[in-house]
Image (tube, rainbow, N blue to C red; front, side, top):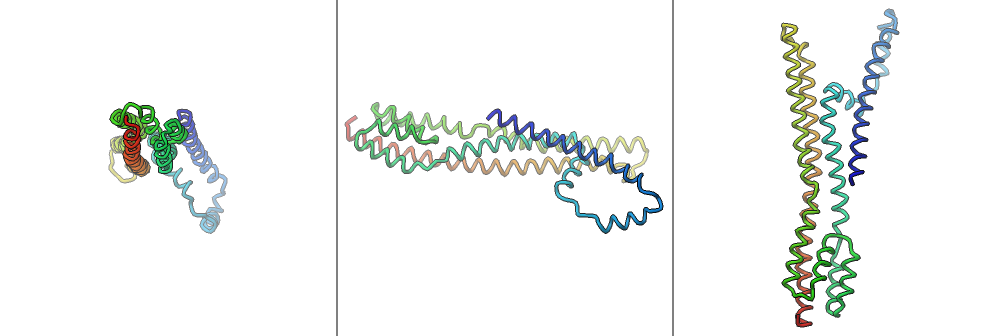
Length: 268
């Protein structure tokens, strides 16, 4: 999984850098095209451009806003998005694998215990994927020590599995908090640039402060959008974790019922 995070981070940074280079090339190419056009043909070029102009695509508009919001600060906002999505993807994959249907396994384990086949029950639990099967297996290892020992084992190992389910969620919450903070940082710096421009020009006309205000607003919007995206994934992951925890509790109760019946039958 560490390699997965590194790959996502590298790809994200490369994409940000590539977008910056492409837009810089477009900006450099624009004055050249304006110089090539002769002054006598300006009216004709303007009318032709109006006729053949295509609507700006979402990807191109996004790149333009990325550069207008200051590529440095927008890159800082994009880093929490890339890393946060990498952690979200890892958690979604892990929880999807952990959310196994174990009703059939518990029924087969109960039947095996009714027959007195403890080793067969252990094999079923060991060969089944997911935290519930791991908890059941730990309980079966101590089934000959009594129901109370099995219950303590189930509770203790259930806490371990719950911790594994909630692992890395703190990193996602960190990136959710970082994204707006970095956006607001760009806002403050953009406002400082606007006041510097006013001081140098000795005037407070809208044209002078437009550049700094644009940086301030775009970085704030970018940070809020990143936080909203990560918050949606975070809530989905939390719901998934709660679902699995409820299944663990229900399955533990069912398993303890099988253990008690086994102990009563064998007078343990």
